Image (cartoon, rainbow, N blue to C red; front, side, top):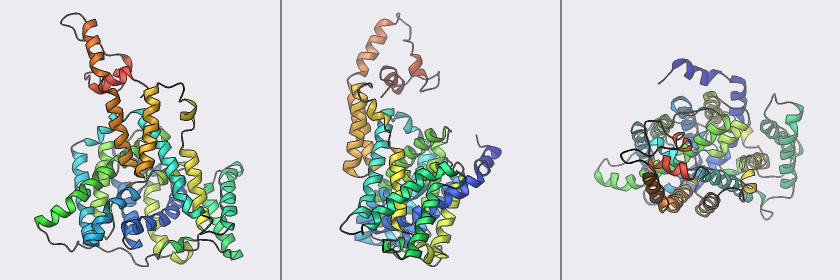
Length: 432
C-alpha cells in the first residue's frame, strides 16, 4: 500500500549523499549514452535525451530508489535493424509501444517472475556483469589507439579511488578522480582521449514531438516485434538490477511498480526524441558505492546530465576517458562475487554448473537479459527430472488423506497458505 510519508523519506533521507552520487553518475552516463546511440545507429542526442528522461521519470515513478535507468546497450542492439530499415521515427514509435507493454506488465503483476530466478543464476549474472563491464573498457586501453599516458592515468585514477576514502569519505572518491584528472589534463595539455571524442554533445533542450509514421496495421506489424523484445529484455534486466540493489542496500522494493515506472519512462521518452532504455547495472553500482540511497540520486543524475551536456558541454567534453575507465574498473572489481569462486567446491555441483553456465551465456551473447533467460532454461531443465520423484516420495510418506508437509526451507519462499512448485524445488535444492 502506498504511503506518502515513506515516499517522502525515499527522497529526503540522504540528500547530501544523493546529490554527490548523482553528479558522479551523470558524468559517467554521458560517454555511455553516446556510445549506445552509435550502436543503435542514431545521433548522440537521442541517447542523451533518453538517459535524461528515463532517469528523471523512473526516479519519480519507479519502484527501486537509487537504481539508475537510462539508455542501455541491451535495448540499443535490438533497435539496430529497425533503424537501418525504417529510420528514427519508427524507433521512437517502438519506444512508445514498448513502454505501454511494460506498463501493462506492471498492472498484470508480472514483476513477481523474479521469484523464480535462483540464487545461482543471480550469482552468475553478477559475475558476468562484472566481466562485461571490464571488457567494455578494453577499447579505451588498446595500445594501438591510445597513448601510453592513458595507462598511467588509469592507474592514478584507481589509486585515488581506493586511497582517498582513507583520508575522508565526505566526497565520493570517483568524483575526486574525475576532477583531479580533468584539471591535470587541462593544465598539462596531455593528449588523451576525452568525452568530446565520443561524439558531439547537444546544445538545446529536448522538445515534445509525435513520431511521424503512418497510423495503420502495417506500421504496427513493423514495430511490434521490436517493441515486444525491448519490453521483455528491458524489464528482465531492470528486475535483475533491482534485486541486486535490494541486496546491496538491504532494503525492499516493488517489482510491479518498477515495471510501471520503466514503462512510463519509455513511453514519455519516445515523445521527446529518445530511444528506449532500462536499468543500468554498472551505473547503479556507481551510485550505490558513491553513497546514493534515495530517489533523489537518480533524479539528480538525469537533471545534471542534461545541464552538463547543454549548458556545460565545453567543460564536459574535456573530461579524460581514463578517469571514467578507472571508475568502471573499480565497479567491475567491486561487483564480482569473489566468494563464489572459493565456494565452487562446497556448493552442490548443480548450483555451480548453473552459475558458470549463466556467466558463459551472458558473455557469449553480450546481453545480460538474454543470457539470463538461457541460464534459467538450463536451470529448469536440470530440475525437470527431480521434481516428480520428490513429490512421489512425499505422497508415499504422508498418511492416506493427508497432505505432505512443506519444509521450513520451502515455506520461506511463499506465503504459508500456498504451496507451489517453486517451494518444492527450493526445499530440495535450497542453494540453487
